[in-house]
Structures are given as structure tokens and as C-alpha cells.
Image (cartoon, rainbow over all chains, first blue to last red):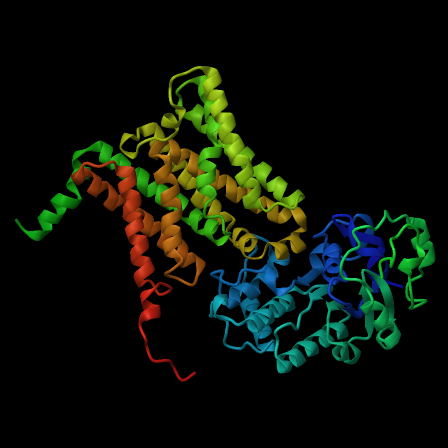
Length: 276
Length: 295
């Protein structure tokens, strides 16, 4: 398999409690994957660890593409929308990776930025300050910025939060177009019907991988129930995890068996109820 | 006497007559040009109180400069600058590698630095009040101090111009920058920016006094944000307001025989109140019940 990003026994923990636990597998180049799971399942942490924004405690993230060609749409809360910047300038920041601090922005680039704004349904907004936009409109501006980035791998963290259904349709069409252009797209989503309709691959997370593969197989009732059963509160009495990296790597050949890469209750020294 | 010549007499002649007034005016203009734009960027990063904290943090560096070289402006400046940069760098490192946010780590470090400064001074056994050295007076600016301030202002303007896009992006959306240019990419812009702030503050503490240094950096910046929606306009507005406050403050202090630094800050405060009341993002436009549009 030609992987864009592969995860080898990835564990990320906050105050020693794992948010991602022995995650193993790979996102194929050109694949379109939905990441699904309950709150606290480690979905955002997964994206951030792939970007190097959080430190991996164990294991590795291997990116097989140029780091500058990875685009990321974070969750809403992380940007100050009162910042004095126009919509057009905000979209043009999509050229940062290509042009950096010094590179010139020419008329053709501005024209492309306007096209991108039109594509997300914000025609005629270019001169407005970002502060005047609604939450959903601002999210679409960030989508337009990604359109300019020409990224090989695109990570979207709950991209359709606060977006109306018509625009969600438009944005899903843009995502399909990316897929058709053989870009790798990974999106954290909550709407299961949407995932079934528009995303060929799904990764179901509940700190560990519950299932990863074809959406139809992953999103079966049995798997979803197992994901829902994840205890959201951390177990304060949990002992030290003693699963070795070799075991994990030996156990999993991703995409061959969809179920249970690492049933958490099988490994030693975990408190009652385990990590599921 | 015509009105024009009266105005000339009131508003221009004090500067024609006295060289200390001329030097003070140039110093105030240079400070306006250099530090007001930095103040705008500081408020955008929600670090409005940074200058105040830093004015205490540079004390140990100034003390070391004084112990080794005595009362020399370059030595005190370099010492203060080194201490400021060290504090900023340590605070930045702490915020990147622990759970503390930058303002919290800075708050912790600057009091330690202040305490160290006081210990250094008392160990040296001098009766001289270093805070007095540190906090100068705008009417006492000599040519050496003027060159220092002008140099720092030039460096700030050039630095902001050269790194404008990076500084803007690092304030607006640091995580986007971190994804694109690797983790260190954003940190470089942040560090250069904070170094410019330290340079400005240290240079103007000694020549103009801490009140004026911090006040002229932050007050016009806060007012300017009420007037415009775009960053370039806010930056220009802050410079104009700071320069205006400097000019008016010097005149008032000349005629009323009161210390010039505080008067300049009060003038900036008056501009702030006017902005609060009348600026488009201020209080009065909200009060005016203008009829709403159709769409």
C-alpha cells in the first residue's frame, strides 16, 4: 500500500492517561477517510499528533509527504475572530506555505482567492472584515484558504460544525473534488449518515482503534456499540500499560482485519473495566 | 496680534526657544513611531500588560550593568536588554514545554527577576536608587539618549515592515503557521517581535521614564483599535495618536509647569476617552439609534 501517513503504535497521553492508545495503521494516498468516535475518543488528538502539534509518548507518526503540503482545518474555538483582517487577506494566507514572509502575491493569486471564496458561497465578501462574519461563514473562509494551499494531505477537524445544510452540501462536493484529484482527505465527523454517504473509508476511534476500513463494514451496529461503551472519564486507578511495541506491530496488519486491532481488555495491568 | 501669530507663539515658540523641548519632542515622536505599532500587535495577542511586567523584569540586567560599568547609558541599556530578552525567552520556553500559558509564566518570572534585581542592588551596597536611573525624564534627554531612541525606533519600523506578514499570521492563527513551517517557524517571529518590544521599552525607560514608555506604547494602541477594521489603518492611527499626545503633553507641561511624562500619558488618556466615546467601535455610535437597512 502506498501510504500518505502511517501510524506505528501511536500513544498520546495527557497526564499519563492515554487519549490515543496503541493506534496502528495507515492512511492510503488519495484515500478519503472519516474519523468517527464519541467525545473524548482522541479524534482531534489524532489529527494534532499527525501534524506534530502534540507530542507522541510512544510510537511514531510517519508522514510520507512534504510537511508543508499538509493542510489543517482546526476546530473553531482556536482562532480569535475579532482580529482586524479582511476576508480576502485571510484567504490569501493560504499561500503562506508556498510564499512565506517575503514572496509576492500577484493579481492572479488574488483572482484565485476570489474564486475560492465563490466556491464556498462567499462571493462578494472579500472586502469585509473577518469580525463581521458569522461562525459558519468564517468556517467557510477557512475552507477557501485550504483551497489555495494545494495540499496533498488535508486534515479537517469537525469541518461542518455550525454550517447550514446547503453549504455543507457545497463543501462536501469540494471534498469529493479533492478526492477525485487524488488528495488524501481525513475528516473528523459526527454525522453517521453523512459518513456513510460521502466517505469511502472510516476510522472508528475510542482511544484505541475500534475498526478501520471500508465505511460499510466499519459502521456496523456492533462496532458503534463498542465505541459508545468507551468510558469517557479516565480511570484514576489504572495501572501502567505494559503492552510492548513489538506485540502491537506484530498483531496488526492494517486493513486486513477490520475488527479489534488491539482489544484493550486483553492487555495486562489495566484496572477493572479496562480502557473500553 | 493676529490669531495665526498667537497660535504660532503658543504652539511653536517653546520648541524654537529651548533645545530641551526640541529634543523631547523628537524623542516623543520617535517613541510614537517605534512603539505604538508594537503596542497594537501586543493588544491583538492579548498581551496588553506585557510592557508593565517587563518594566520590572529588566531590573537585574540594569543592576549588573551598573555594578560593572557605573552610570553609562550603553551599559545599562545592554544589561536591561539582555535581562528582558532572557525573561522573554524563558517565559516562551515554559509556555511551549509545560501547561502554563505565556502570560502566567511571564507573571511568575518577572517578580523573580525584580527580586533578583533588588538583591543585586543591596549587595552592591550603594545608596543610589537604581530605579531612579532606570526611570528617566523626557525633558532630560541628551543626544546620546536621542540616538538610542531613534535607532531603536528605526529598527522597530524596519523590523515590523520586513516581518509584517509573519507577525500578522503568528498573532492571528499560530497553529496554522506551526503546521506549515514546522514548529520553530512561528516561534522565530514571536521571539523577534518580543525582542523589538523589549528594545523599545528598555531604550525608553531610561530616557523617558517607565510610565511614558509603557503608556505611549499601549494607550494609543488600545484607542486605535476602536477606529478601524484593518490592521494597517490601526497601526497608522496609533502612531498619529501617540505623536499627538507627545506634542500636546509637552506643551501643556511647559505652560503648567508639571512633569511632562505624566502629562503626555494623560493626553493619550484624553484621546483614549474621546475614542471610547466617538470612534465607530465606541460607545456613542451604539447609542445612536439609526434606522436599520433593508438587508
